[in-house]
Image 1 (cartoon, helix red, strand yellow):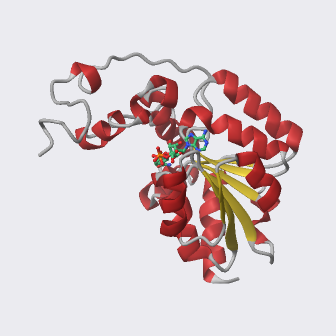
Image 2: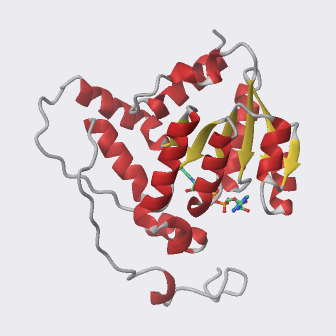
Length: 261
Ligand SMILES: NC(=O)c1ccc[n+]([C@@H]2O[C@H](COP(=O)([O-])OP(=O)(O)OC[C@H]3O[C@@H](n4cnc5c(N)ncnc54)[C@H](O)[C@@H]3O)[C@@H](O)[C@H]2O)c1
């Protein structure tokens, strides 16, 4: 097996590691190149899933379509990634014409479900960025669509791949510290990283379901994966004390902000 195929399979297997789904159900191991279409040519779409796959895995996969509602981002994304494919502003048209095996969803969180469900219905496997979606109604609709389609759906919880996180999983699985009885888990966002969310749609409840969903979904995933568990009950409380409209350290937008420097 070529090194890039092995590396790609390993990283994708890590994503699927906590699901019951056998990884070989995806077409990743096939001799044919995997045909990929991506919707949402924003920062995550064109960097992590776009240029990286084009640069590192061109011998095992190819992009057959890129889609976004923003034609400027689409044109930039095509050039930046180096993908040799057609661009679309109509998602369904892309799936019909480009016939991908796998659809990668990197739009904003609140509309992941539209593309996941449509792609499954149209016979594609789907890899979506986290979070799967932003509320339980959309979540249920996705699960039903997955069941009905018989296709595979995977969520890109990449925190699992950090070498130290993978090592922790290994140590826990090997019972290196014995039997677990309880866990305390804290995750602190620094104000640089935190502020970056509140400058974009990520800080709007209706787009991201709040940082509890948008960001903490990583942390819930990591912890549940480490200890091989699923939550029985989840609740949260908090307030917006530092970011957004409650902070003096802000402007209407970056261009005219008095704190720009
Ligand atoms: N796993 C991680 O560590 C990680 C890191 C960053 C982002 N993400 C996830 O990746 C996704 C994208 O985030 P981003 O930071 O790249 O955002 P972004 O705003 O840069 O990109 C989103 C893109 O989706 C497009 N889009 C929005 N609605 C659309 C629609 N209806 N049809 C077609 N295109 C549409 C936008 O025009 C934009 O180009 C989010 O779900 C985010 O949570 C994950």
